[in-house]
Length: 73
Image (cartoon, rainbow, N blue to C red):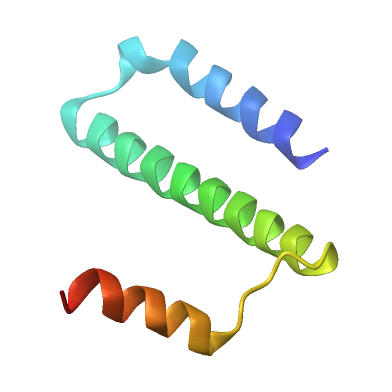
């Protein structure tokens, strides 16, 4: 499973933190941030696909009415 591989990689990286210099730590933090963003995006997409599959959808018109009511008050 991909998640298990990611967890192992992160654990390995964390174990090696003592040997990293500041630039390596910065690159690691950026990579972990991007990884978390990717995982969050995949989760959000999956939730939305599940909503569509289960009929939990709204029309474009109803969403636009909500937006206009909220921001054009």
